[in-house]
Image 1 (cartoon, helix red, strand yellow):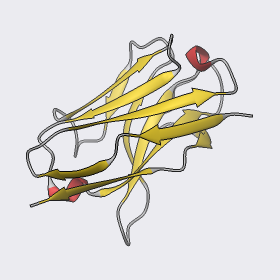
Image 2 (cartoon, rainbow, N blue to C red):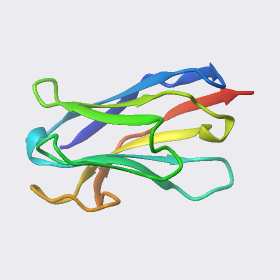
Image 3 (tube, rainbow, N blue to C red):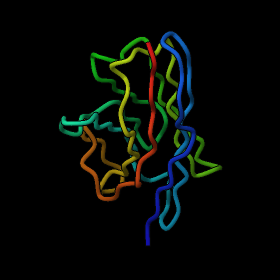
Image 4 (cartoon, rainbow, N blue to C red):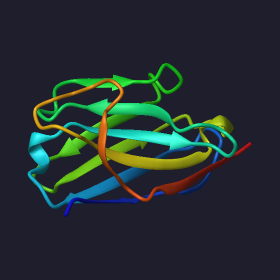
Length: 124
């Protein structure tokens, strides 16, 4: 059974940084693209970033481009989201997702599995 567990959320001031982690288990992590999504109160879940299975291709939503960086460590079965220059509008629950099919990268990721999310709050 695939499990995705996010960590690293919290409260940060505007302009600050956080790094989210998502630990995966249950299938060959290095064969699957991964993504991050977020959902703010009263809004739909939106795509944030994606990374291919080979750690070469990355994609970002325009709202985070230049501020957020997605990366992965296949030896640790973990994907990261480094968030810099954070803004109050980045406040949301952040979810990790695994691409449904191996050796495939949809943009946004077509999630086969979701994590339970981690809260990120940016104060002004």
